Length: 334
Image (cartoon, rainbow, N blue to C red; front, side, top):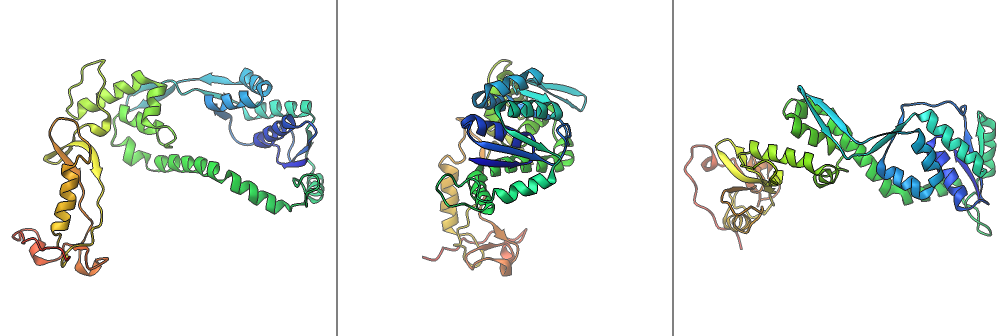
């Protein structure tokens, strides 16, 4: 197969050398408009999981990269005068130029052709390879069709990465007011480490059970739960939560469900049975101790004219206003 890789960055070089390892007969050319030593951006950081993948795909390249990398396990947080260290994460970092040189050398050793600073060569290659990738005896496929197929094949993995980046960006955009100003250091550390949602609470336990256990005991004690040193604390979800003068037994909330069975804006027997069943049936789950649980009722419109349906609840009737006597409960239509 004849392959032209446009762009000689780390991704293009690594793809090219892996394809050459798959089949040395592949005719592979990497075209880069800049010089071999040119690079843009910061250094490159890989996780331990990424290095495991590299060792599996090409041990030679992985070994050369590891010899040039700097490795660390800990993440330190300096926050409001406190220093918190979380270990077990596993990262390696290297200068981007050094990484490019390692990959370029490996490509040349395997027989991948590298073309630098040649825009004319790039244009000529693109014109010659319009049918690339079809295979022997198969009809040629235009490059746009091949790119569309590649996009479809990689779409899910791409969305995972973009979603993680989006979550992290959204966290940093509101970090000051929502997290820095309101959270104490242990809780802020957990929030920061899980900001992309690719690292879960239980994944943090795998990376550092002692550290997370200490955070859970700290959190439980703040919520009024007595936990001895060295003893496991309940998960944060199942610690009490105070709402003004009401203390809920845990932090699990049953989300509201629209019943569309109100009569003239008022909730009726259908709502009582539905919400009562949720409250009595163990949702949300709770430990053996007694206490209130939170079950949200259906959404209530501020005015009757804003109801989505005639069966939606509304809070604008005079007898529902603050200070009015409690109305008799109407029966839902059958």
